[in-house]
Length: 454
Image (cartoon, rainbow, N blue to C red; front, top):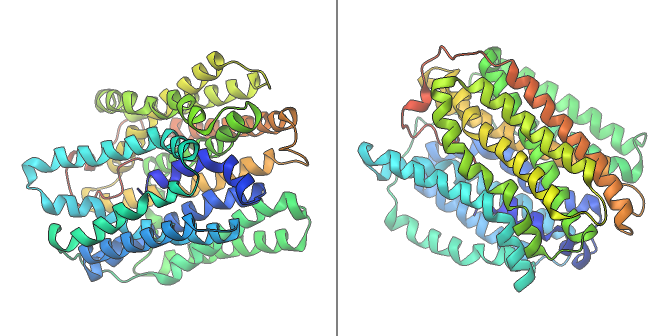
C-alpha cells in the first residue's frame, strides 16, 4: 500500500485536475505532500518502533494511513486532499520501516532470505503495476477508489496484527525531534518556493522568504546534526566517497524518474488523448523493466563492481528521457515512445540493486541500518525536488488549453529530467572502483529495513 500510493496517484492526476478544479501546483502537492511527509519522518518511524514496540507502532502507522486514505477518498477540494496526503505519508513513514524488522522476527535465519526476497518483490510489483492499477481504478470506477481500496486492507491489518505479529523493541534511541522539524522545514520551504514561483513570480516576497527560510532551516539542521549525540542524519557517513556518491546517484535517479512520471501520465492523457488505463499500460516498458533487469544486474555487480552499472544505468535513463523530449509531438506514435521508455526502464533496473549494494558496502556492518535509512530519505527527497523542478520548468499560461502548448512545456521539462539523470551518471563515475568495507548486503539483518527499493 505504501508503495502503491506513490504510483497510483500519478495516473489519476488529469482526472483530479478536472474533478477538483486543481491547478498544476495543486497536482504537485498531491504527489509531494505524501513524499515529503514520508521522507522527513522515515527515520523517526523506525525509532518509535524501537522505543514503544514495533508491532504496536506498526498498528498505529497502518491505522493513521488507513484513516488518511478514507479522508483522501472523501476530499471535496484539492486542499483537503493535500492535507490527507500529508497524514497518509506520516502513517506510511511509521509503518514501512517496521515491516522488514517484523518479517525478520517472524522467520528463522534459514528462511529469512526467502521472506525478505518476497518482501522486495512485492514492493517491485507495486512500482511496476501502480500506474496500471491506478488507471484501471480511475477508468473502471472513479478516482476516489484509488484511496478507498486501502481501507479494508488497512482495517484487516490493524485487526490481525496483535495476534499474528510478535512484539519486540530495539535499543530505545533518543528521538531527534528538533532535527526532524528542521529537515521538514527546509524541505517544505524550498519545495514551496519552487511550486509557487510561477504563480506569484520569482521576485515575490512569498517565494524569496520561503527560499531563505528553507535554506536557513537546512543550515540549522546541518549544524545541529554535527553536534547532537543522537543525530537524525549521521553526517560523517557522507565523508566516505562511496556513500556520498551512491546517495547522490539515488537522489538524481528519483529526481528524474518521479519528475518525469508526474508529467508523463498527464502527457498520455491530456495531450495524446489516452484513457487512464491505457496510459498505465503504455508506461509498462518503463516501470516493469526494472523487475527483469535488477536481479541480473545485482548478480553481475558482485563480480564486476557497482560503479559501471550505476553509471551506465543513469546514462540509459538520460538517453531515454532525452529521446522522449526530442520526439514528443501531438500525433506521436507509440513505437518511439515505447522504445525510449524501455531504455529508461533498463537504466533504472541497472541502478536499483547496485546503488543499495554500494551504500551498504561503503559502511561497516554495524552501520548498515543507519546507512540504508539515510539512503531512503535522500531518495524520497530527490523525488520531491524532481517533481517541483520539472513542474516549474513545465508550467506556462494556458498549458492545459492546447496539446501543442502542453508538449512544448513537457519537452523542455523532460530535457531537465535528462540533465538530472546526467548529474547522477557523473556521481556514479565518482564511486570507488571496488568497495573495501565489509559487505553489509551479504548479511540478512533486521537493520536493513530501508534497503528494499520500491
